[in-house]
Image (cartoon, rainbow, N blue to C red; front, top):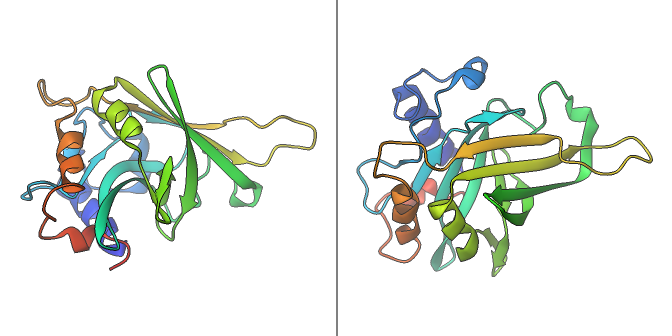
Length: 209
């Protein structure tokens, strides 16, 4: 996954997504109007990334990635952070992290409970598992491709004794963002990666290579 992290960072620094040189300090000022930006020069692309329109935690970019899973490919929703982590709401120390964090994705009026998997340098959101590989279901992909607003909601902080669990972290993604006529096209292109011939550089986007 270091390879994909380098790709994402390089793209940010080159201005493909934000037009700004990447810096964790700039996270709150990033322009999210570009919408989904696919991998350049590859058809189909092996990933597309998007900036949240707003967030109250250390989430930098959301990446829809086509990953090798044994002899086939799956799609994952991956989160890259503004720092070394862990994923936490602004102003909350890592020592308050919850033992059993949870998350859900809300797209318009549809709620998708998702699992949280924490890797060394990113977080994976998954609503289905295929032969032990976490991935994104066709229903969730349809909603991402066709929806208007995606809210990523997180329960990451341990509550004081007696208090009910609550989602205290949230990132909002504008699924309509980007140039006119491009809505959903980048997501659809990455979906083709999971069913068509493997892109030449798919190995670069795989955490298992």
